[in-house]
Image (tube, rainbow, N blue to C red; front, side, top):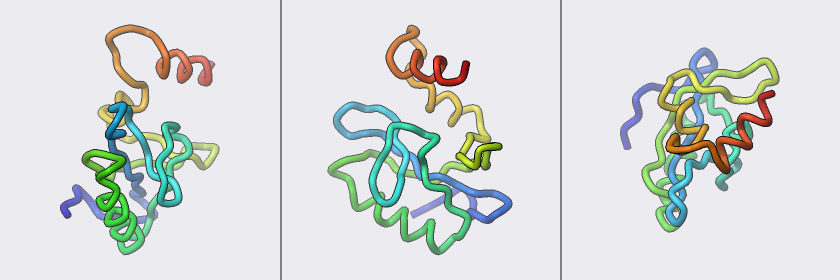
Length: 109
């Protein structure tokens, strides 16, 4: 299991993957998966993140390619992306404005 960095309180992380059936981006929350990145569990401890990654990797019947993604706590305490790739992933496909993109935009107005 490789990870690009070690989560710390200064550099927290979330675990993200793609839903096996639908292909949508999902984020780990309490050992399960959510389509809402704002509900993702934030990991600040390396050992806890490692255990959660093992759990994520064991769910190959549900998700594809789980990995740690660096995040930060927003003003409301919810995770926010620190890298443009993760910001892009949370908005959904960019081919046209529909579904997840429309919902995300409406919730940020």
